[in-house]
Image 1 (tube, rainbow, N blue to C red):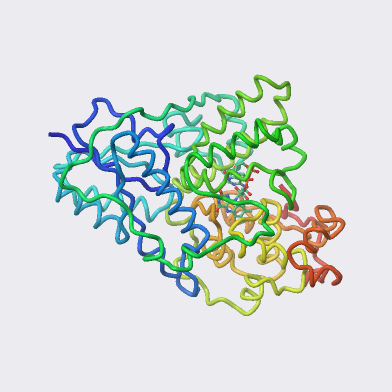
Image 2: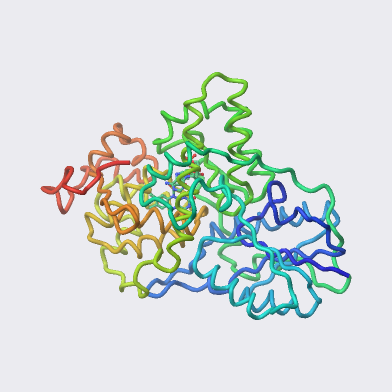
Length: 448
Ligand SMILES: Cc1cc2nc3c(=O)[nH]c(=O)nc-3n(C[C@H](O)[C@H](O)[C@H](O)COP(=O)(O)OP(=O)(O)OC[C@H]3O[C@@H](n4cnc5c(N)ncnc54)[C@H](O)[C@@H]3O)c2cc1C
């Protein structure tokens, strides 16, 4: 009797998920998700848990939705909270699992966990690992991982030359049955974190992110076919206010409720009926950034997070987190981040640059705060982007924004500040500590 255990981590969907494509099919199947208890504790030096209420709630919604889809196909889901390696190893031993299937992840903790688990399971269990969720898999990357270029531009040039991205595959219609004696189901969120169970986003965000594959597909459908907003993406993607200036697909992509190939295929299908290739191509270009950060993180391992210890947070860091810097554009964005769990790319770049280059803050603390707040937190995209802004990554040019100029350009009438911080709407734009320095310096890139 063969029993496969699918260990789900950041791939909470059935469509385009190689973990659910069996050849041959096992006699029985268990699908398991383990919420790492370490995520409920703060990173050293911070007081907030690594996973904040917005993400935890979205995650739970995604798990509930996934369970529904699995049940429809004759399977089920087991969700546990604890040490993932220990939980999976115990389940494998207790139920005579013959095969373990999982996706290779970008984070070094996740990679270490898999190695520990493989050692613990020994030869009894066949461990099958795959890539998934990205445009490319390691086998279809346009270069060996060891030769990943130092800059995104070089990666993109190579990717576009080779450009063989497989199409997304369908969800399975039926799945093997659940072993009779095995536990199943998930604990209520209120038992894990009452704050997350009660969490509601600030209605001023004007958008509701609901976890799960079906709501991700529905957002994709809306962005392409209902609103047609994708046609204007190239011009609107630097927006700050409103539901459709960008795709807002990031939470679904980060939790694996959608794969990048599904988005790519849907955009191509939309293009086939509209004439505007170049404009919608920009969405795929952004997905390529996501791939790049993933592969860079895979290559860098632990180095992605910088030196081990986080520094003690300063008062200016707390002021930044709480939106009390005195620069209304920054304070409005930090308010949006904390109260909705999401922020536009333009605002992320500005608040990150402000912390690093105006407050002389530490990029790792900024990344840790984002990790806590973001509903779409993704280890590779978050820590990779922070390194990118700080110029400590593979590409060592420093990205510095003149946030006052940026506010003039992207919020010329002050509507964004008035929306999030009406009490600051009449305030002066603020002063930059390094005012005299502002402007391109050697090795300093103002925008990207
Ligand atoms: C400091 C900083 C931290 C960030 N942290 C994260 C994070 O934890 N998780 C995350 O998904 N994105 C992160 N980003 C990237 C980007 O800001 C978000 O992906 C984007 O704002 C999400 O909105 P959207 O889905 O509407 O994006 P769109 O503009 O519609 O882009 C489509 C998709 O492309 C991908 N994408 C776009 N830009 C980037 C980028 N620069 N890097 C990686 N992927 C990108 C995302 O998956 C996004 O959903 C970060 C950016 C910065 C500057």
